[in-house]
Image (cartoon, rainbow, N blue to C red; front, side):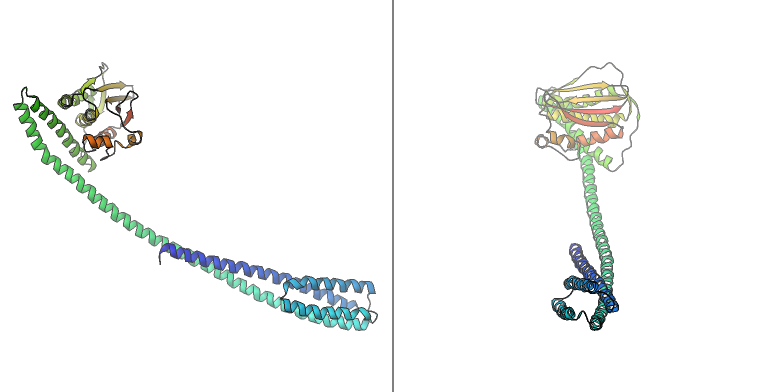
Length: 395
């Protein structure tokens, strides 16, 4: 049986037992009240029978009136035929007393007969009450047992469902890990396989392309493709936990200059100017210059890709005693607000990014490098158009 069906069956059984228990309690309460009335009647008639020979007529009339009222109150606790039969007999007995009230001996004899009947009724009421109490106890025990069984069955069903779910999650997780490992292995192998021919193309174009704009464009595209291959290989290594950063005090101006120098051929090929704002302040941070250069180059390449020909990629430093910020602003269309939090996720590309090409890995690598340097990176749209990538590093 499915867990949901079993739980529904258990709930239905518990509800039925609860209703039966409530009905049994109600019946026990009615029988208890009836037993009280029967006891009161027996006590009242026994008193009349004891004192009938000596009490005055008014007192006898009051006692008989009280007895009639108790009979009327008793009717709602008895089945119709029983109540009607008892009422008929007792009403006849009371009516027969009216003309013979003067004969106290006859009244006493009649009342003693009624008292005997009432005593038998009290005994029967007590027996019925005891029987009802036993049935109620049985219902209560059954309800408690059903509750225990329901809890045990529900716990077992939940435990089994959790085991099945855990097994399924473990299987899916293992499958996803296998897929992710296969993808990282593919990136690593593809990067290694592509690096050598791309380097050869770039070198041949540089040697042969003195003054040839076509070969110069080939050189620029080869540089850009080399950067993408480096990103793929670096991110594959980073996901496997293999890279080790060599953190040393380094000049951030020199790191940025190295990244800009590597990006210039591609910038010239797409017709975008790289403008680095002058900064005379010495900027030093504890960093791995190779990884930090790769991250900055990745952000620059991303900005060049989204900038329109004739545009400017603006780069500026902002420093405080605690934090050094590098702001790289392109002149492109910007990023949709809903996509801003996701642009640093691996393999994520907005529609504009898919149209302009790319792997969706560059900004993910930049975030990984920033976090390894205990820094942060985020994107924000500019009011004048374009997007600004802000990388903050501890000074």
